[in-house]
Amino acid sequence: MRHRQIRMLPFSLLGIGLLAISAGPSKAQSAAETVYKAKCAMCHGPDGKGETPAGKSMKAVSFAAPEVAKMSDEELETVITKGKNKMPAFEGKLKKEQIVELVAYIRELAKKSS
Image (cartoon, rainbow, N blue to C red; front, side):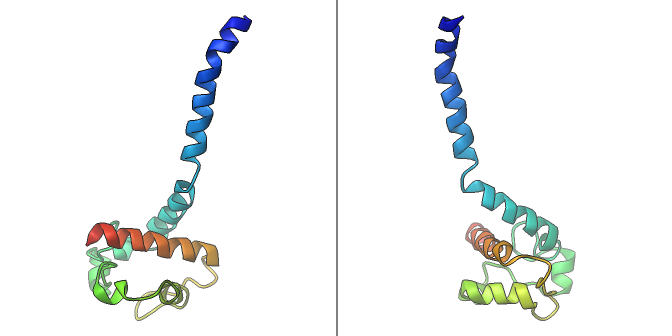
């Protein structure tokens, strides 16, 4: 029995290592992605280009657009918090941490879209 336990040890350690790697930074990313899909994708689209029916009717700007790209993270946080034009405010609906993570996620979408 002891011999079997020793042979299984490398596999157990490998499994623990893979779990540790998979629970790292991607956890925050998936939380931001979940918020994005629930609160933003209807207008901004899954890719951040704003090419959804709602996005087109509200004139949502692509996250890869120069006017968005030149905005600071703080400016984007303010837009999400306070709203802008037809975009609703998320103050009181999202926590500050969620908004910060959302801005990082938006930046990643912009990189993929350009």
